[in-house]
Amino acid sequence: MRSIWNGAISFGLVSIPIKLVNATESHSISFRQIHTEDNGRIRYRKVCELEDREVSQAEIGKGYEDADGTIIPISDDDLSHLPIPTARTIEIVAFVPADRIDPLQMDAAYYLAASGAPAAKPYTLLREALNRSNKVAIAKYALRGRERLGMLRVVGDAIAMHGLLWPDEVRAPEGVAPDVNVTVRDKELDLADALMDTLGEVELEDLHDEYREALEEVIAAKAAGETPPEAPEPAAGGKVLDLMAALEKSVRAARESRGEEPAPTEEAEVRPLARSRATPKETGGKKSTAAKKTAAKKTTAAKTTAKTAAKKTTAAKTTAKSTAAKTTAKTTAKTTEKKTPAKKTPAKKTATRKRSA
Image 1 (spheres, rainbow, N blue to C red):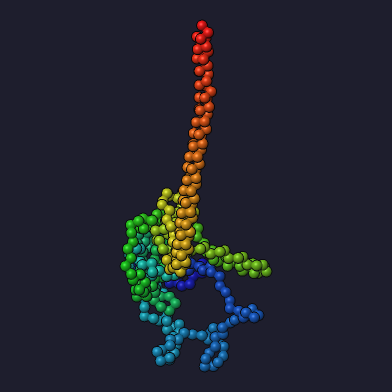
Image 2 (tube, one colour):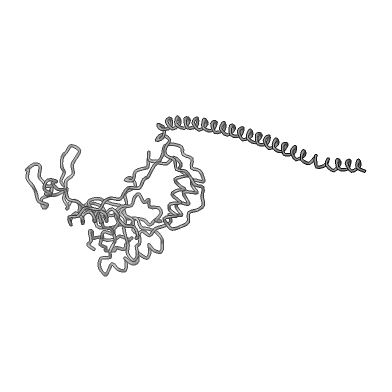
């Protein structure tokens, strides 16, 4: 890796020659400005305002603009003679626990490479001392025209340095938090904990820049004269009124995405904001009232019909009973008439026999 700065680490009376190299690299895709009519490149030319002509890089220096607009030239020689000990030195000033460093202060990251064989022993000594103490080193150094703050820590077998912002460069979070009183219930916290547990951890190495990959596909398609791929439909994300419902659905969706069985929880209803349904509420109310009246009329008519049918059935049953009774009476009378003479005949015969005697 190409070094961007050469100097030394000052560790008390120990000096460790090192090279500073970038620890990170950008994979973002950059674009050029073009003239849309003919795809010609748009370039910026460096022009001197006094002479009204383009100048080369060799003719360009540094200058400080004073409050009244006066330009004060500053040369590289002026910067090299600054009265500070950190001009070419990373001066360690303290060792502190790593959790003392606010992540908001973290800036660019660099690797510190030992410069030559003589630097191997003191470099390894500092690395092992940091490892055993479980601390990080706070240092000051000068880079790109100003003094900076840094944090040294061990990464594998190397020493890395993170540039730190000065404490007065970090803004206080004023006016950022909600300015209203909010009460969070224990059940809501339990669901939030369940969602965190369900999402679990992730290996950072498995994460990748999907935007850059999609952009590369578009560029490759256009270079080949093909139609760029269509963007997928964005997921519908409606606003919800019930926070509990949103949490429960989030936990369920996270478990399903991991192939887990969803926990048996009560089905929560996700409702839209009340203002979004205020207008149709009146119309829906009228329709509902009319429907209720119509249903009531139909129910009353059905009951009346049922009563009429019941009356007709009762009358029919009564008529049938009356007819059956009359038929039974007639049949009984005829049977009685037939049976009665049969009983009297023997009596007549007996009387005749008596007379004959």
